Amino acid sequence: MRALAVLAVAAALAAPTAPVGAETVSGIVQPARIVSLAPLLEGVVAEIAVEEGQRVRKGEVLLRLDDSVQSARIALARAAAEAAGEIRRAEVAAAEAAAVLARTRQAAQAGAAREWEVRQGQARLEAAQAALQAARERVEIERRRLALEQAQAELHLLRAPFDGRVFRLDAKPGATVTRATPVLTLADLSTLEAVLYVPARALSRLREGMAVEFGLGEPVEASVTASLRHIDRLIDPASARFRAVFVFANPEESMPAGVEATLDLEALP
Image 1 (cartoon, rainbow, N blue to C red):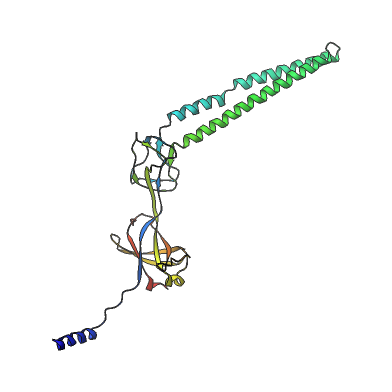
Image 2: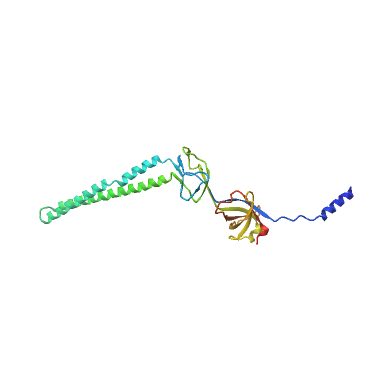
């Protein structure tokens, strides 16, 4: 039995050694831009303007909260801002005071009016002019209030912060939502990124902007060329690794997010 064991060990030592696989690091591919959006105000959802899977442009309205009260406030502010009656009345009063003062001065020059009557006419004109200025300032304030109410109305709208695709809707018309309630997930798949934690010994072989080849896992099963966008210069002492962010273009959105990306460190220059 002992002889058989010795022969088995000898045979194992004589067998060819299996090749050591290349050292690799892996990470998950994610959209470079992805956000969960919540409304800016608490309210009731009046309209959802998009559907899941729909592509949207930056600034496009995605959702609208009920703004009936705000619309009434805007109508009231607009009526006040566009009211011209007070200014017109003050203009007429100022014009009449100026005419009276002119006649009084003419009369004074002819000896038919006294100095105190001229001063009184001057005071009336200045009071009328001050009333006109106050009326104009009140209308300007109302115009600014209208602009404020219109800006407040914009808070009832949820707009796309960037070009992307709607991937999830978590609200329906009639639902009450808050600022802490994510209602929609928006992602831009035109640029994908993979965050990898690379061994510190590979730091000298990487530089920002360099191109590297990645292998993508199922269901893609393909290779892509990515650019190294960022290297963290803070190495984690526990794992002796640093964070590196690689990005690659996906203009046709042909590749999904969520697949595994693998980098062969032995293939680095």
